[in-house]
Length: 299
Length: 263
Image: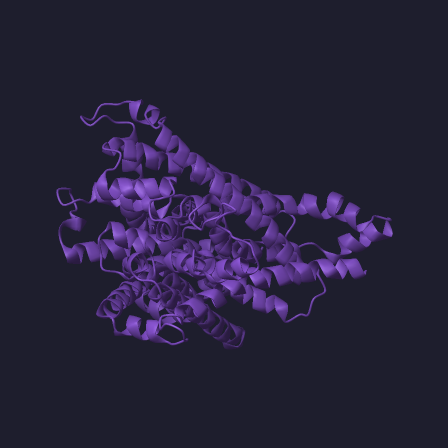
């Protein structure tokens, strides 16, 4: 209200100056749009266009069609599996952790500790994270050795840090904290009155969660899970440092393609990149849509 | 009641185990370089290595340049959008979120195609120009965090009144931006800056594909060739990340607590 009143007064008081400025106001955002165009939009568009072109420049769908070969299909499959597993497990674990400190009646000092640690751990990704997990669950890692002493040989059980589960467990180290950070405000948004009201009406805790809390929370829960998915899908450094090129996932395949044209066809590389944009793009559109729904309740 | 309290504790104990054990394991591993006893040999080895000092120095300079360029790009834009062009807000917000949608490896792939040595802006033709491209690529990566931090900071102050007050005292736009707006969002800018530093310092994908001697590619190289030094480096990197987050807490809270008093 105050804003409207103030701008009305401004409009009456200085009409002439205002008209002059309106015509040049857009100049103020030119640097930003120019930057975004040069370093974000054009490079991406160029790849997308390249994916639909033959080497001599004419339009084709052939590059997309040629994505359908065993190496590439299995790379997408493993990438999607790792991203799905790490986002779903991360979401569930993150939910329970956030729930425990927000409404679990544990000592109050645990909450700022978890928040700070989550801030650090969600940014502790990339190569150092891979080193940490090699030292933990690698062939000579501490936990591997400890389990060996207990009579559990991880290797004979089929587990190595270079496998699907190894990568998933490593990704969880930044996925869970991200979930905790995004979900805590959402849990704060569950009003105490709702729980009290449902208790007065005779609802059990299960009924409260089933009919009140989860319907309010699910857009943020699902939305954040999707964000975690995109987060894991585009990650290169951790996987590369952990497995070299032994695990065939899309970002690593693309990395190898850029470095040395392993697919022996640059335009197939563009199609590979387009596939990544489509998958993370769809995931993020779903996230934005769900977040908008979730925010209706959390005000 | 009792069962209701057990669940949260189980979650916390499992969480602590999962998050602390790798740190302990990494630290223990980093001490194992000397056979039969614990020592800090791996750390000395790292600190004595010229490539560590050079690559860490290089990445620090790139990170600082990224922060300067990022602040110069984001603060005036966010300010101007709030003051004059609120209708463009959703557009600008959408653009700043795009680096979260488009994976870094795709963006840098686009650079290599668009800015190769025979293109209209040959960024990759010389080392200096590629450094510049790396800085711009990091500004792009940090855009979501920087813009969000600055915009939150601007929301807390009365941009219009401050601007009008400065104008009626005869200030020009540069004075308003650098002496009025920027000091008022200092806390927000600093948290954006430290977050940017934490993200950029060990970044691997872009530095490696642009072939620059940054800390990330150095880490990868050590990981492929040494046994105990990677663990020591992981501990160092964790400490750097922790320091950045700690500084966000220190600076992010201090001035903003003072802000209402100042107004």
